Image (cartoon, rainbow, N blue to C red; front, side, top):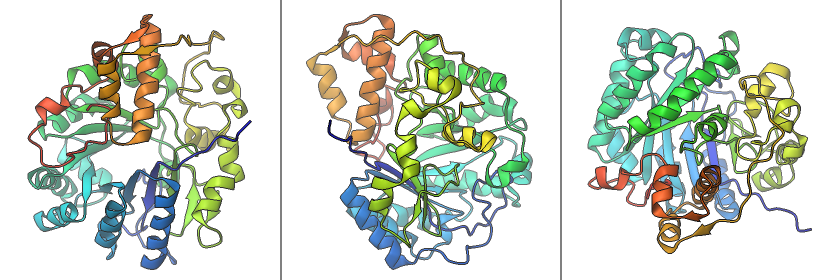
Length: 414
């Protein structure tokens, strides 16, 4: 049997540990720059490897990526190679000139962190005076300059009840997507209290409903792949979202050049200072273990959703020290009944719509999610109407048709 080929379609790159804020949940424990961070030449060589391997989307983050002097050179180089470049920032340093420079360099979107709708609570949490005001200003500037904006929020006990208000905030500020991250106890976040499995399930259940209410804005859960199981149980769309991609389509590169399966897992698969990124991606024992769902343990190993979900490997590692253990943040008890696998027919209009998605790994996730939705509904033929039900934010192209950025939108909403 031929060995399956894995592609690092999505890479999250922590370019620096240097940061102008002191967030207590920071997985990187950012603040001061690391003693040895990758040089510009080393970064450019890495980009060449990513292009060869087939990387399609690159997240440039930190720390605060705007504190790296070569950030625009790296963004421009990656964009020229055909990668969709997204920048993750706290927004404090974003000005109109900065946003225009991002556009010139080919950056497609900006993720900005907002953890409270209350300025004082956000500022206290983020450890920066007027951090909220700067972040909101950055949202407005980025939209004015033609960049799409993703509002990034980490849900914790402290802001659990604020999520509806934050969703309203994101929509009112024209966000492309609202990404709700579920805290993983790593980095400085080790000292924080994780949500219980029951509280996580309750929030995810709300998100399944809210994704419909906030169209065309996307509503996404991060670090909680069991969103798919909950959406499936509710007979709702959104099955194209989520699912743990660590080591199969996704990895992280640290400022020092270490490669890990995910930003929230500090298990080092290898260092690009010692061997090539290609060698690490293709041969790392850590990645090899994570790529085989038969290796999963406990409830995750027995779960009928393991191919759709896989459980959060980072949360399992943070709780047990074993990245193959069951996800303690999930309350689901597997039934032992396999999900239906009926062969489905895609009509021409639906197939054409699917193929308009320019990024192949998102297109593949979309196909898989739509087909899971159709089988759950007992539908044998996939039409555009079925796709409308399966996917959230389908009116995006009409509502945001005038937006100058993302002319080739890397989403499942084309």
